[in-house]
Image (cartoon, rainbow, N blue to C red; front, side, top):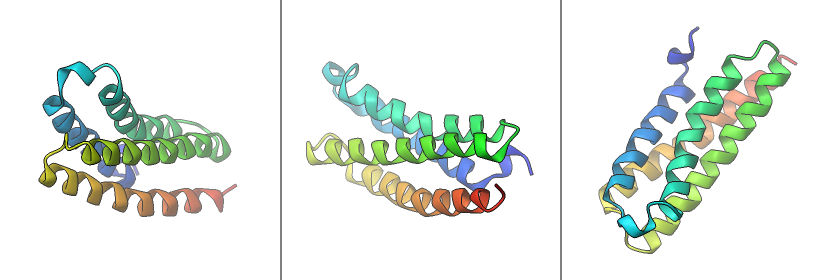
Length: 118
């Protein structure tokens, strides 16, 4: 199986794309603070999955998958803050929140499937 075939990676790419769409609509005065942290966290999910996939040993891969999960929770946090502050279109918020919730489950299952191989 290739990286591009991994469902957790595909969902991470969707999260990144939706986060970018939201980022582009956010007030420019916050672009290099809160908004940038949101985008960085969203982009980091897929980046860590990719880096973990490229590692030779399962144990080495796992630490990157854990980092991806941490970034996922961080992106979820920032999305909640942006929504609370009325910076996010409700449709975009709902779509991204749904993807994040799905990714939490899928990524945890993926991590557990790797842990049994150690």
